[in-house]
Image 1 (cartoon, rainbow, N blue to C red):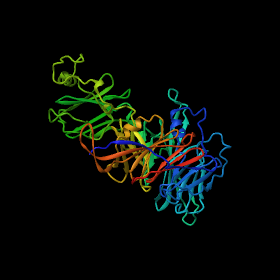
Image 2 (cartoon, helix red, strand yellow):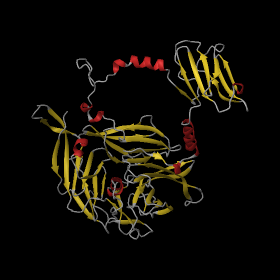
Image 3 (spheres, helix red, strand yellow):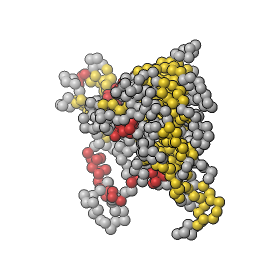
Image 4 (cartoon, rainbow, N blue to C red):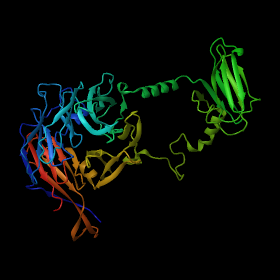
Length: 568
């Protein structure tokens, strides 16, 4: 079985529909100069596909209207229809971002006007020519502007809740050596408070993650129990979002960083424990008690145990002793009952002490390891195992300190529960295959591209569901690419450039005739076709979406529909 790609230009299959009033494009300001600003806002997808009703796309125009366009025939559209109008005048606000829309469920939508206000809207059923009025059930000002990354609808304690992810790029006064900005992901939970009224919604929880790069992917689990983030730089919970549990964990960590309570070392025969005593302490003020499996050290006035607990192993308590030295330190000598084995800890479960390796033991270990080290790079090149040459490493062998990683955060504690280093597996794009599930993400694996579906309820958490042959290699050659997408049924993948051109890569299909490879003489069983569409416009592409049968490409004034004929 051998697949190859043949190039064919699409002709007369791209239909353009002029949109009423141009799209509300917001260009970057002079103070939005970093790569993060470009990734978050300059490359924003202004075209929104309704995953619950895939023949419907939406955009926000210059008048602040949310416009809907729906398919009637293959590439025929109904007239643009206004479904909602933002109350605020967008143009009047200088410090605004692009308006963002996310379809939370089949009957709910979250909407941002780009000025810092969030709307929760009940839409009713949106498909099949529905004309139900979009109704605002919650809206609140959140301060600085943001865009909506993801949202879900779920039940929390039998109450309807909506989780929303808000993305910001904010000025960071403490970052004097970097770009001067940080990226924040705010997870907001909005919950219904009264069962009698439909309008009783309020914020029940707000948490903020901070990082130094815009996430490639961020999505909330359908149950609201966790959050998954793919990013180049790690994210961490900010102090404003910490709860009491997290603060107590940090306090414990700070305590562990303090000066050790005691130091201990061991030989094959005995152990030595050293305490530094406060000033003016006499021998009479100290009480040390031994038993075969127990040690207690107490200081008088008042008498309180400084160290007490079960020893890791048994000792000869009758031969063990202690003294107070001139440097005001207490030394306790414990004689092992079983000579030889090392102790991993002195007191079971006590971490307040610090182990100091005995110099003789350290020298013995170093002597045993001398055959593995040398002052020369390769003292004996005739040996069978020469040293590793870093220049011979492949890209996939290199582990970068700040390489892209996939992290899962627990929804309650916000602790990281899973971390996967993606290494050289480049992130390509995300897509919604099933609107009831989390969005899928596509990663490059060698020359191919693999589509992964998050499964938070399963032990492995992520499942490989499809492969796009050679897409990883092909997309790397498209230097002007702006958006990538694929069909929900994985039948094709597509990418569009900043201007005019759209590339479609179909999955391999069986041949109805016999075909042989000229060079190798082997029979070819499958063929994968590449299609190219050139749009009749010179305006930059602002939005790009894919369904099983169509591609939607949005410019400032025109929406193009490309019929992807999967049968012929």
